[in-house]
Length: 621
Ligand SMILES: [Zn+2]
Image 1 (tube, rainbow, N blue to C red):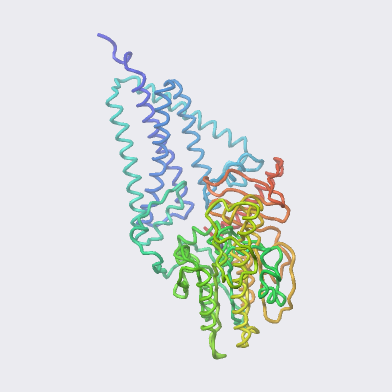
Image 2 (cartoon, helix red, strand yellow; image 1 turned 45 degrees about the horizontal axis):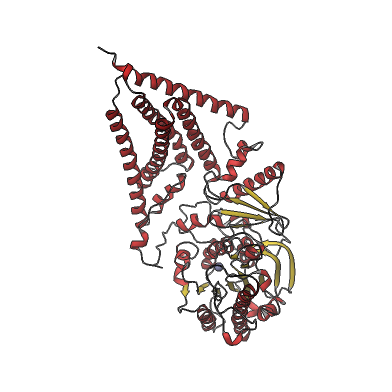
């Protein structure tokens, strides 16, 4: 009679070993991942508690299963002996990733991105990322020990498995059972997420932020109607208890001037001129004009977020998920302002109602009509019609978001000084040379049109004697590029054309002047709240400062969905946010041409960015 184990094929034995090895590591990873829940302060038993645990466990299980399947494939194709080293190595890396990610998360409230991964390699990187032990040698020793333990564990398991009869069918059944459990976990956490999303259970959805690489699954679009009113929970700041960091206080003698806040979509810096915008130019002569003003984003959503919150626009998804509007609107309501948001935006308004305008959504008026120029004209009409007749009427805070200047560029053909202009703008390939000029002319005609409407709104204020008591702010949500640096439109890069915007700030009683030096949309809340008599320091509620006090910012930050740029007048440094963002730091000169930064230069930039991110994250905890 033959000895059975000697003929047991190697495949099933290894597949079985690998399975137990993965299950062991899954337990280890899950225990470590509990650190995410502790970092978030834990939570009492609730659906939110259940979801956070389930989502973390399912995410880790899915990652483990995926690793296992790849290893099975490698074993089957490349030979089983590789597994003895490869499996422990991969398991060590997986554990290392979760450990470092949760350490970073505990302090910064975001998951590892390329910036942090790069920073790991720089001197002092572990300390900067708050990873213990922060001494590199000690850290390397701990990793080496872990790897040894994994190696040993794999060996022991294989010896155990080899000592018994292992049949292929039995092993396959166990693997299928493992995959089935993992699949069940993944399905149940995503169903729970979708249900919580429908029920708008924000405390549950918040749990997804703890999970690295979490892919939310929603059926919202099937169920919810476009632009439907969003319920504002009474404890709207529950998910962001550190925003603001202290309640706002007002000086007792604070006045309540009116505010007109005009956002001209895609208005780039050089489209403010005596020729292109004569009416705003006229206002500018009596205003503070900021010559080096940067948007906090290169898209409508992110640029607008930055100007009303005074925070990095990368926080937009978090604030939208929490339905947390800016403290600016809280303050205005508290001070008895009549708020009115007149907008000719179409598509993104539904998103704005969930985040930026959630607290004032009843005051948002979306003007109707297929043509942007027509909607913008209605903004002017509505603004005029709503102007207070009586001197004892409450002060107003009017936001006008004008869209004529958005790609498509709409205007009054009877008043189009820039000719010839392109009859329309295609989606791509706007062309070069003459066509480029014609498209640019179309854009400038649209800016000219918006200028006329803004001029008429200022005239209306003047006619009624209201201008002496009204702050007027006119700016762009972001710029617009016409291939100057290889891009068209906006949302493509952080070129000067896309982020450098005009800022005209009319403050009654303040003599007009041009102000040189870098400034940012992030400074706008502190500037306006300062004028309204808020006595808190700006750092209580924003990352900006008052533009009337400070000459220049040392840098400006602009963000898109997965990338940010630091602009400091000399260089632009772009860096990815989140692991799906672009890899690493890119340094561009003042003309947005990539330059090769030395290792020391990159290290310095990494340190600077991490310090800035740490400050930003104080509002997100
Ligand atoms: Zn825009």
